[in-house]
Amino acid sequence: MKTIKEKHSLAMRWCHWVNFPILTIMIWSGMLIYWGNDTYTFGLFGHTFFRFFPKWFNDALNIPGRLAEGMAFHFLFMWFFTINGVVYILYTVFSGEWRELVPKRNSFKEAWQVLLHDLHIRKIAPPQNKYNAAQRIAYTAIIVMGIGSVITGLAIYKPVQFNTLTWLCGGYHAARIEHFVLTIGYVFFFIVHVVQVVLAGWRNFQSVITGFEVVNDKPQPVIKPTADEK
Amino acid sequence: MKSNPKPKKVKKPLTIEQKINRRTFISFGTFAVLSGAAYGGWNWLKNSPKEMRTVTAGAKVPLRRALNKTELFFRNFFSNNNLVKTYPKERAAKVVRYNSGIGLQTEPDIESWRLQVKKQSGEVLNITLDELKSLPKTEIVFDFKCVEGWDQISHWGGVKFSDFIHHFKLDDQAKLDYVGLVTPDKKYYVGLDMPSAMHPQTLLAYEMNDRPLTPKHGQPLRLIIPVKYGIKNLKCIGAMSFSNQRPPDYWAEQGYDYYSGL
Image 1: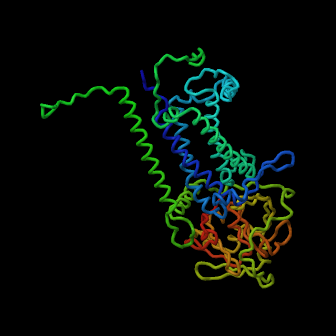
Image 2: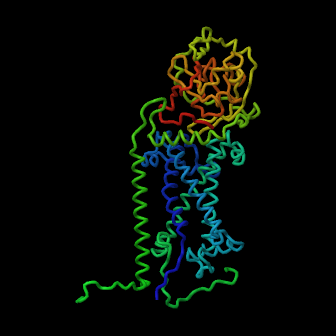
Image 3: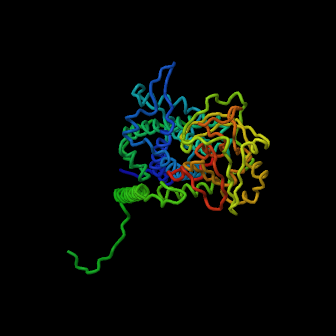
């Protein structure tokens, strides 16, 4: 028999889907701004492997020569990005949902096992509740990164008025690099996230819109949660 | 066949299948409507007209409004006690980046150069470089920040703007909301809110790296205003004026934030 299993709260779904277009706009407008001084490269031992960004890439996305426009978009949508993030954090804290999200002491060890399992190297995944250890780390890290983007962003935006933040980031120059690296981090997160969602299948994806999953109560081999999971 | 013209509706409890369908329909429906609204909102913003040309131009109307509102919010954090970080002289760049020559096409004759200060009354002061140099000199070594995203530690010397105001008895002018600066050829101009101009680190600079300014860096006198992006640090000042209306600003006419404060 089928049963409805509640999975994602309305607040979580709301913040997730509101964040998606906002973050997209922030990254896009950020690229318009970065173009104004696109000096970052990725290199090792004196050899440059990649330059952010190649000309064909900028041209394809119509990036060049839109600095003022980029700043105007960035400094409007920064408000929505921050407010949405604050709402989500307050919600997880006061609802108690943070307990399902924050990594636990054994999460880092387990995350490795999850990774090996996902790569089909290890047969069984460690037991989990709503989120597995790797998800706990990823979904907490992305929030820490979000906070980081706001702090490094403010440090670049008002380096004199918020000079303490700028100092905290290691100075203006460093803050701009950190702000950029965090953005690259989002892109990597997005790629891994989407691959995982595709692999997890439609039912899992649907639950982030509907909030529930349909469970078939046919007896299935289930790996029982260990005592310390509860 | 129904014999009763008004059949009684008995509310049966929804089956699990119905519940699933209903909730799925509502959720996906809401999701689709909100996605459509978001897409519509984005299109509205993207296709919104450019602002009418006033002291600002070039930005879309809603975005300009947002820039101005955001300025009002962050103005609450502005204070003369918030200072730009300063560095020892050795950290200053020997080769100072030259980024723009707008307003510098015709080199001013240094001998005949005067700083024209236009009071609101119409009275004009013509101040020589020597008069400015006779005032106490203030030096600053700070990280100059360009709106493009680069920054460079540089070393400047000159008269503190607030010292200049007091010395030339312009305190009543400094009560107005804005100060405007223009190059002698009038090709480059900036408008500054008075609190930023009166910030203790704002200089009318005549020296760079202990030497008189070079033509490329705005000889004989330029503005150094660390609480603003480089675009506000006008090179080669010809005239200064005071007003309660925002003076014209070169880059604010190109879609940049009028205030561009740091």
